[in-house]
Image (cartoon, rainbow, N blue to C red; front, side, top):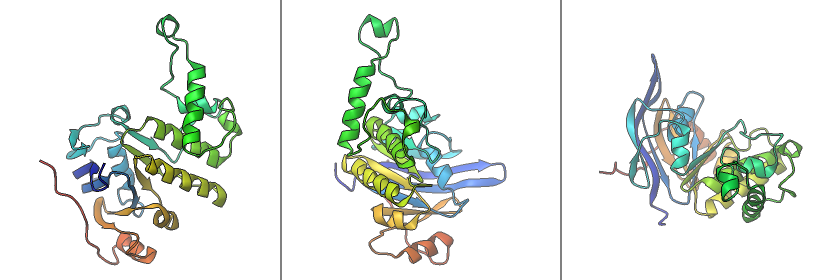
Length: 262
């Protein structure tokens, strides 16, 4: 797939809560095989945008496309079925379950034949084997897939959540503050993992307040302010100070975008 191909896009997204406007005609473009960072001050509309893209929020008006096809998400399950996975800041892992059980949480594999169809028995060996293969492909070493997640470090738990999303995503992985509350070493592990997810052919949306992280990872930077996209920056051409200035409205920068598809 060409790097200029748009995997996902949105035009004119609006979401109001009474007198409060969370999204005010927001546009969005995500290219194939890129890491797109989304930055903005509190109240800029980042969370509302990501919720709209992941199906957790239904915009009042506006349109979205996935691989050139118009989409309407009414719930997160719709987005997941379309191949969009989200890793939330509050890790959606079950600490008492094993690594393999967490990777297939909510999408457990059943045993073939009557045992799975009638008795609903789980195929634990297949889930174990596929989990091990997935983590190996992403370069994550966690030992036994039967180890409970509660015994893992914060960075290792994040790796499990990211690996689960990468396993099921077909188009996009959205990551909300993936290194929050992690130490330097664990953050570095997650950063390497995010790059490997992108290198496997998935587009990644990264929401972060960590500007060094943004500039080390992002191919482009979507800047949100007051519910709109005010700029798309090339991190190789601007400084962190410039990005913060655009984010706060101290300076203006051009928006690079594609026209709305027919």
